[in-house]
Image 1 (spheres, rainbow, N blue to C red):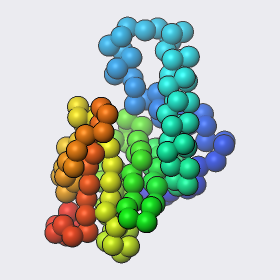
Image 2: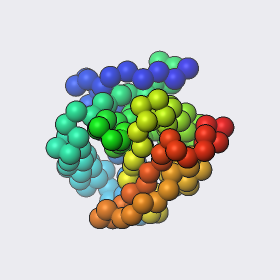
Image 3: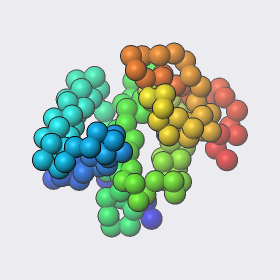
Length: 161
């Protein structure tokens, strides 16, 4: 059973753990020990958090629960002309189980209902890129290091299969 609950300050340790899990492969390649990793990860996590807050001050942050355990988070901003999937992350043990697809399809359904496009940014080498392409997102440009991708309700509804 998947539930989404609003994030609160008590979720900070989980959110840090989740962020750290998204950087694990990268840090292993660098060969850093835990004493070097933790301060770096904390600094990067805070920078990401502050950046998202500055860019999307009204974004909705939800903790994804599988059963009774936190499994990930989704951060969504709503504007007059689009839904923005600011961030989505799942702990490694919950990846590749259809949870991310389900969450994105829910956003696609919301976009259809509201007649809005759904926008996201992704690194070109991210494994999530294939998921976004499967769900019907198209590349609409480059923003810094990220690809800008968009899904529109005008696209065929086959993306809901």
